[in-house]
Length: 371
Image (tube, rainbow, N blue to C red):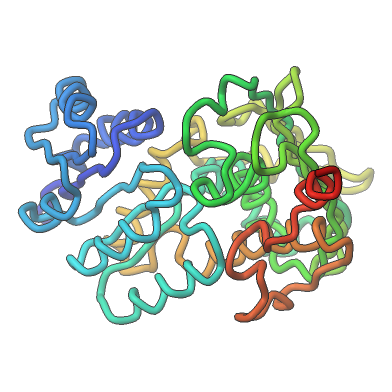
Protein backbone atom coordinates (compact mmCIF):
# COMPACT_ATOMS: atom_id res chain seq x y z
CA UNK A 1 0.00 0.00 0.00
CA UNK A 2 1.37 3.40 -1.01
CA UNK A 3 1.90 6.01 1.67
CA UNK A 4 -0.35 9.07 1.27
CA UNK A 5 1.66 12.12 0.35
CA UNK A 6 1.63 15.07 2.77
CA UNK A 7 -0.67 17.98 1.92
CA UNK A 8 0.57 20.52 -0.59
CA UNK A 9 1.80 23.72 1.01
CA UNK A 10 -0.15 26.65 -0.40
CA UNK A 11 -0.01 30.44 0.03
CA UNK A 12 -2.26 33.28 -1.11
CA UNK A 13 -1.07 36.71 -2.23
CA UNK A 14 -3.84 39.30 -1.95
CA UNK A 15 -6.63 38.90 0.62
CA UNK A 16 -9.48 40.85 -1.02
CA UNK A 17 -12.84 39.48 -2.06
CA UNK A 18 -11.83 36.73 -4.50
CA UNK A 19 -9.19 35.37 -2.10
CA UNK A 20 -12.01 34.21 0.16
CA UNK A 21 -13.26 31.87 -2.59
CA UNK A 22 -9.75 30.43 -2.88
CA UNK A 23 -9.38 29.97 0.88
CA UNK A 24 -12.80 28.32 1.17
CA UNK A 25 -11.90 25.95 -1.66
CA UNK A 26 -8.62 25.05 0.03
CA UNK A 27 -10.49 24.41 3.29
CA UNK A 28 -12.66 21.89 1.43
CA UNK A 29 -9.44 20.20 0.30
CA UNK A 30 -7.93 20.17 3.78
CA UNK A 31 -6.59 16.64 3.38
CA UNK A 32 -4.62 17.63 0.30
CA UNK A 33 -3.69 21.26 0.93
CA UNK A 34 -2.47 23.37 3.84
CA UNK A 35 -2.85 27.14 3.58
CA UNK A 36 0.32 28.10 5.39
CA UNK A 37 0.82 31.80 4.60
CA UNK A 38 -0.78 34.90 3.14
CA UNK A 39 0.56 38.26 2.00
CA UNK A 40 -1.14 41.60 1.47
CA UNK A 41 0.00 45.22 1.35
CA UNK A 42 -2.79 45.97 3.84
CA UNK A 43 -1.59 44.27 7.06
CA UNK A 44 -4.91 44.75 8.85
CA UNK A 45 -6.86 43.06 6.08
CA UNK A 46 -4.26 40.28 5.89
CA UNK A 47 -4.46 39.67 9.65
CA UNK A 48 -8.26 39.53 9.57
CA UNK A 49 -8.13 37.09 6.65
CA UNK A 50 -5.54 34.92 8.41
CA UNK A 51 -7.68 34.86 11.54
CA UNK A 52 -10.77 33.81 9.64
CA UNK A 53 -9.03 30.96 7.81
CA UNK A 54 -6.53 29.95 10.53
CA UNK A 55 -3.46 30.82 8.47
CA UNK A 56 -0.35 30.66 10.65
CA UNK A 57 1.89 33.23 8.94
CA UNK A 58 1.16 36.69 7.56
CA UNK A 59 3.41 38.88 5.40
CA UNK A 60 3.07 42.43 4.11
CA UNK A 61 5.47 41.67 1.26
CA UNK A 62 4.96 38.83 -1.26
CA UNK A 63 8.69 38.61 -1.93
CA UNK A 64 9.34 37.85 1.74
CA UNK A 65 6.64 35.18 1.71
CA UNK A 66 8.20 33.43 -1.28
CA UNK A 67 11.68 33.80 0.20
CA UNK A 68 10.87 32.42 3.66
CA UNK A 69 8.22 29.79 3.02
CA UNK A 70 8.50 26.39 1.37
CA UNK A 71 5.54 26.57 -1.02
CA UNK A 72 4.20 24.20 -3.68
CA UNK A 73 1.55 26.54 -5.04
CA UNK A 74 0.82 30.25 -4.63
CA UNK A 75 -2.57 31.76 -5.49
CA UNK A 76 -2.39 35.30 -6.87
CA UNK A 77 -5.59 37.15 -5.98
CA UNK A 78 -4.56 40.77 -6.46
CA UNK A 79 -5.78 43.49 -8.89
CA UNK A 80 -5.08 42.56 -12.53
CA UNK A 81 -2.18 44.95 -13.10
CA UNK A 82 -0.08 43.02 -10.57
CA UNK A 83 -0.83 39.53 -11.89
CA UNK A 84 2.06 39.13 -14.33
CA UNK A 85 4.73 40.75 -12.11
CA UNK A 86 3.73 38.59 -9.14
CA UNK A 87 3.60 35.46 -11.29
CA UNK A 88 7.13 36.23 -12.51
CA UNK A 89 8.20 36.67 -8.88
CA UNK A 90 6.78 33.24 -8.05
CA UNK A 91 8.55 31.66 -11.03
CA UNK A 92 11.82 33.18 -9.83
CA UNK A 93 11.28 31.43 -6.50
CA UNK A 94 10.54 28.14 -8.28
CA UNK A 95 6.89 28.17 -7.22
CA UNK A 96 3.94 27.42 -9.50
CA UNK A 97 1.41 30.27 -9.52
CA UNK A 98 -2.35 29.93 -9.91
CA UNK A 99 -3.35 33.38 -11.15
CA UNK A 100 -6.79 34.92 -11.20
CA UNK A 101 -7.90 36.07 -14.64
CA UNK A 102 -6.63 37.81 -16.62
CA UNK A 103 -3.13 36.38 -16.39
CA UNK A 104 -1.76 39.57 -17.91
CA UNK A 105 -3.07 42.89 -19.22
CA UNK A 106 -1.82 42.32 -22.76
CA UNK A 107 -0.54 39.65 -25.12
CA UNK A 108 2.95 41.16 -24.96
CA UNK A 109 2.99 41.00 -21.15
CA UNK A 110 1.82 37.39 -21.26
CA UNK A 111 4.50 36.49 -23.82
CA UNK A 112 7.15 38.10 -21.61
CA UNK A 113 5.88 36.02 -18.70
CA UNK A 114 6.07 32.89 -20.87
CA UNK A 115 9.72 33.70 -21.60
CA UNK A 116 10.41 33.86 -17.85
CA UNK A 117 8.62 30.54 -17.38
CA UNK A 118 10.88 28.88 -19.94
CA UNK A 119 13.84 29.54 -17.63
CA UNK A 120 12.28 27.70 -14.66
CA UNK A 121 10.72 24.40 -13.68
CA UNK A 122 7.64 26.14 -12.25
CA UNK A 123 4.48 27.02 -14.16
CA UNK A 124 1.88 29.77 -14.39
CA UNK A 125 -1.73 28.56 -14.41
CA UNK A 126 -4.82 30.72 -14.93
CA UNK A 127 -8.06 30.50 -12.97
CA UNK A 128 -10.80 29.47 -15.40
CA UNK A 129 -12.75 27.35 -12.95
CA UNK A 130 -15.85 26.83 -15.11
CA UNK A 131 -13.87 24.46 -17.33
CA UNK A 132 -13.88 21.97 -14.48
CA UNK A 133 -17.58 21.47 -13.70
CA UNK A 134 -18.68 17.88 -14.31
CA UNK A 135 -21.00 18.69 -17.21
CA UNK A 136 -18.39 20.80 -19.00
CA UNK A 137 -15.85 18.00 -18.69
CA UNK A 138 -18.44 15.56 -20.07
CA UNK A 139 -19.39 17.89 -22.93
CA UNK A 140 -15.77 18.20 -24.04
CA UNK A 141 -15.34 14.44 -23.86
CA UNK A 142 -18.40 13.76 -26.02
CA UNK A 143 -17.48 16.52 -28.48
CA UNK A 144 -13.91 15.31 -28.85
CA UNK A 145 -15.12 11.74 -29.37
CA UNK A 146 -17.42 12.90 -32.20
CA UNK A 147 -20.53 11.56 -30.47
CA UNK A 148 -22.39 14.85 -30.95
CA UNK A 149 -21.46 15.31 -34.60
CA UNK A 150 -20.10 18.54 -36.02
CA UNK A 151 -20.41 21.77 -33.98
CA UNK A 152 -22.66 24.15 -35.94
CA UNK A 153 -23.87 27.14 -33.89
CA UNK A 154 -23.13 28.55 -30.42
CA UNK A 155 -24.27 31.39 -28.20
CA UNK A 156 -22.27 32.78 -25.28
CA UNK A 157 -23.81 35.50 -23.12
CA UNK A 158 -22.55 37.10 -19.93
CA UNK A 159 -25.42 39.46 -19.07
CA UNK A 160 -24.52 40.96 -15.71
CA UNK A 161 -25.29 44.19 -13.88
CA UNK A 162 -22.85 46.48 -12.11
CA UNK A 163 -24.05 49.87 -10.80
CA UNK A 164 -21.98 53.04 -10.94
CA UNK A 165 -20.85 52.49 -7.33
CA UNK A 166 -19.09 49.27 -8.34
CA UNK A 167 -16.51 51.37 -10.17
CA UNK A 168 -15.63 53.46 -7.13
CA UNK A 169 -12.93 50.84 -6.41
CA UNK A 170 -9.86 52.62 -7.89
CA UNK A 171 -8.67 49.81 -10.15
CA UNK A 172 -12.02 48.98 -11.78
CA UNK A 173 -12.97 50.26 -15.19
CA UNK A 174 -9.44 51.36 -16.13
CA UNK A 175 -7.43 50.07 -19.07
CA UNK A 176 -4.10 50.52 -17.29
CA UNK A 177 -5.10 48.60 -14.16
CA UNK A 178 -7.93 46.19 -15.04
CA UNK A 179 -7.05 45.75 -18.71
CA UNK A 180 -10.59 46.23 -20.00
CA UNK A 181 -14.27 46.07 -19.15
CA UNK A 182 -16.61 43.05 -19.15
CA UNK A 183 -14.79 41.48 -22.09
CA UNK A 184 -11.66 41.09 -19.94
CA UNK A 185 -13.02 40.93 -16.42
CA UNK A 186 -16.42 39.24 -16.57
CA UNK A 187 -17.40 37.51 -19.81
CA UNK A 188 -13.95 35.99 -20.16
CA UNK A 189 -15.03 33.06 -17.98
CA UNK A 190 -17.91 32.15 -20.29
CA UNK A 191 -16.08 32.51 -23.58
CA UNK A 192 -13.11 30.62 -22.19
CA UNK A 193 -15.48 27.73 -21.51
CA UNK A 194 -16.89 28.12 -25.04
CA UNK A 195 -13.39 28.02 -26.53
CA UNK A 196 -12.50 24.95 -24.48
CA UNK A 197 -15.43 23.14 -26.14
CA UNK A 198 -15.30 24.49 -29.71
CA UNK A 199 -11.54 24.76 -30.11
CA UNK A 200 -9.61 27.31 -32.17
CA UNK A 201 -11.41 30.36 -33.55
CA UNK A 202 -10.47 31.88 -36.89
CA UNK A 203 -12.28 35.24 -37.28
CA UNK A 204 -14.00 37.82 -35.06
CA UNK A 205 -16.20 40.76 -36.03
CA UNK A 206 -17.11 42.85 -32.98
CA UNK A 207 -18.68 45.99 -31.55
CA UNK A 208 -17.97 47.57 -28.15
CA UNK A 209 -19.24 50.68 -26.45
CA UNK A 210 -19.41 52.60 -23.21
CA UNK A 211 -23.16 53.04 -22.94
CA UNK A 212 -23.84 53.97 -19.32
CA UNK A 213 -21.10 53.34 -16.76
CA UNK A 214 -18.51 55.89 -15.49
CA UNK A 215 -15.54 53.95 -16.84
CA UNK A 216 -12.62 54.35 -19.21
CA UNK A 217 -13.38 50.89 -20.62
CA UNK A 218 -16.35 49.48 -22.48
CA UNK A 219 -19.40 48.34 -20.52
CA UNK A 220 -20.73 46.11 -23.33
CA UNK A 221 -19.29 44.19 -26.27
CA UNK A 222 -20.84 41.97 -28.93
CA UNK A 223 -18.97 39.64 -31.28
CA UNK A 224 -19.69 37.27 -34.16
CA UNK A 225 -17.14 34.47 -34.37
CA UNK A 226 -16.13 31.82 -36.90
CA UNK A 227 -14.26 28.75 -35.66
CA UNK A 228 -11.75 26.57 -37.50
CA UNK A 229 -14.42 23.85 -37.52
CA UNK A 230 -16.78 26.15 -39.44
CA UNK A 231 -19.06 26.68 -36.43
CA UNK A 232 -20.47 30.19 -35.94
CA UNK A 233 -21.05 31.84 -32.57
CA UNK A 234 -22.25 35.06 -30.99
CA UNK A 235 -20.67 36.42 -27.80
CA UNK A 236 -22.18 39.18 -25.62
CA UNK A 237 -20.44 40.67 -22.57
CA UNK A 238 -22.52 43.19 -20.63
CA UNK A 239 -22.57 44.98 -17.29
CA UNK A 240 -25.87 46.71 -18.12
CA UNK A 241 -28.34 43.83 -17.70
CA UNK A 242 -30.62 44.01 -14.61
CA UNK A 243 -31.77 40.40 -14.92
CA UNK A 244 -28.40 38.81 -14.60
CA UNK A 245 -27.60 35.53 -16.25
CA UNK A 246 -24.75 33.58 -17.84
CA UNK A 247 -25.82 31.52 -20.85
CA UNK A 248 -24.09 29.11 -23.17
CA UNK A 249 -25.71 27.10 -25.95
CA UNK A 250 -24.01 24.65 -28.30
CA UNK A 251 -25.92 23.30 -31.29
CA UNK A 252 -24.15 20.24 -32.62
CA UNK A 253 -25.22 18.08 -35.53
CA UNK A 254 -27.01 15.61 -33.24
CA UNK A 255 -27.91 17.59 -30.11
CA UNK A 256 -28.29 20.98 -28.44
CA UNK A 257 -26.60 21.50 -25.07
CA UNK A 258 -27.60 24.55 -23.02
CA UNK A 259 -26.30 26.05 -19.80
CA UNK A 260 -27.86 28.88 -17.81
CA UNK A 261 -26.44 29.92 -14.44
CA UNK A 262 -24.95 33.03 -12.89
CA UNK A 263 -21.63 32.60 -11.07
CA UNK A 264 -21.42 28.80 -10.89
CA UNK A 265 -23.31 25.81 -12.25
CA UNK A 266 -24.39 22.30 -11.28
CA UNK A 267 -26.03 19.54 -13.32
CA UNK A 268 -29.47 21.14 -12.86
CA UNK A 269 -28.36 24.18 -14.85
CA UNK A 270 -27.76 22.16 -18.04
CA UNK A 271 -30.27 20.97 -20.64
CA UNK A 272 -29.63 18.32 -23.28
CA UNK A 273 -31.88 17.98 -26.36
CA UNK A 274 -31.04 15.27 -28.92
CA UNK A 275 -32.03 15.46 -32.56
CA UNK A 276 -34.88 13.01 -33.39
CA UNK A 277 -33.34 9.67 -34.16
CA UNK A 278 -30.45 10.21 -31.73
CA UNK A 279 -32.31 9.78 -28.46
CA UNK A 280 -29.63 7.39 -27.22
CA UNK A 281 -27.39 10.42 -26.71
CA UNK A 282 -29.60 11.63 -23.86
CA UNK A 283 -28.75 8.49 -21.90
CA UNK A 284 -25.08 8.97 -22.73
CA UNK A 285 -25.27 12.54 -21.43
CA UNK A 286 -27.04 11.45 -18.24
CA UNK A 287 -24.56 8.63 -17.54
CA UNK A 288 -22.28 10.73 -15.37
CA UNK A 289 -20.04 9.38 -12.66
CA UNK A 290 -18.63 12.79 -11.73
CA UNK A 291 -19.53 14.40 -8.43
CA UNK A 292 -22.21 17.09 -8.81
CA UNK A 293 -20.33 20.03 -7.28
CA UNK A 294 -20.84 23.69 -8.16
CA UNK A 295 -18.26 24.78 -10.72
CA UNK A 296 -15.76 26.78 -8.75
CA UNK A 297 -12.22 27.14 -7.50
CA UNK A 298 -12.18 23.86 -5.59
CA UNK A 299 -12.58 21.80 -8.77
CA UNK A 300 -9.73 23.56 -10.56
CA UNK A 301 -7.38 23.35 -7.57
CA UNK A 302 -8.23 19.67 -7.19
CA UNK A 303 -7.50 19.16 -10.89
CA UNK A 304 -4.06 20.75 -10.44
CA UNK A 305 -3.22 18.33 -7.64
CA UNK A 306 -4.56 15.36 -9.63
CA UNK A 307 -2.44 16.34 -12.63
CA UNK A 308 0.70 16.66 -10.54
CA UNK A 309 0.18 13.23 -9.03
CA UNK A 310 -0.48 11.69 -12.47
CA UNK A 311 2.53 13.41 -14.05
CA UNK A 312 0.38 15.52 -16.39
CA UNK A 313 0.52 19.21 -17.27
CA UNK A 314 -1.75 20.87 -14.69
CA UNK A 315 -4.52 23.38 -15.10
CA UNK A 316 -4.86 26.08 -17.73
CA UNK A 317 -1.35 26.65 -19.08
CA UNK A 318 -0.03 29.95 -20.42
CA UNK A 319 -0.50 28.63 -23.96
CA UNK A 320 -4.19 27.98 -23.33
CA UNK A 321 -4.61 31.27 -21.46
CA UNK A 322 -3.04 33.09 -24.40
CA UNK A 323 -5.70 31.75 -26.79
CA UNK A 324 -8.41 33.16 -24.55
CA UNK A 325 -6.57 36.47 -24.07
CA UNK A 326 -6.08 36.75 -27.84
CA UNK A 327 -9.84 36.31 -28.25
CA UNK A 328 -10.37 39.33 -25.97
CA UNK A 329 -7.71 41.39 -27.76
CA UNK A 330 -9.19 40.57 -31.16
CA UNK A 331 -12.65 41.56 -29.90
CA UNK A 332 -11.33 44.98 -28.94
CA UNK A 333 -9.27 45.36 -32.12
CA UNK A 334 -12.25 44.53 -34.34
CA UNK A 335 -14.61 46.78 -32.39
CA UNK A 336 -12.32 49.81 -32.31
CA UNK A 337 -10.98 49.48 -35.86
CA UNK A 338 -14.31 48.50 -37.40
CA UNK A 339 -12.89 45.51 -39.29
CA UNK A 340 -12.83 41.71 -38.81
CA UNK A 341 -9.74 40.33 -37.07
CA UNK A 342 -8.29 36.92 -37.84
CA UNK A 343 -6.60 34.64 -35.33
CA UNK A 344 -2.87 35.31 -35.33
CA UNK A 345 -3.31 38.72 -36.99
CA UNK A 346 -2.27 40.67 -33.89
CA UNK A 347 1.50 40.46 -34.28
CA UNK A 348 4.23 41.79 -31.99
CA UNK A 349 4.16 45.33 -33.35
CA UNK A 350 0.37 45.71 -33.30
CA UNK A 351 -0.93 48.26 -30.75
CA UNK A 352 -3.58 45.77 -29.59
CA UNK A 353 -0.80 43.35 -28.64
CA UNK A 354 0.62 46.02 -26.32
CA UNK A 355 -2.70 46.95 -24.68
CA UNK A 356 -6.34 46.01 -25.01
CA UNK A 357 -7.43 49.55 -25.91
CA UNK A 358 -4.85 49.79 -28.70
CA UNK A 359 -4.89 53.58 -28.36
CA UNK A 360 -7.97 53.61 -30.57
CA UNK A 361 -11.01 54.27 -28.36
CA UNK A 362 -13.88 55.66 -30.44
CA UNK A 363 -15.52 57.45 -27.50
CA UNK A 364 -12.26 59.24 -26.72
CA UNK A 365 -12.07 60.45 -30.33
CA UNK A 366 -15.63 61.75 -30.09
CA UNK A 367 -14.79 63.58 -26.84
CA UNK A 368 -11.71 65.16 -28.41
CA UNK A 369 -13.75 66.32 -31.40
CA UNK A 370 -16.18 68.11 -29.08
CA UNK A 371 -13.46 69.98 -27.20
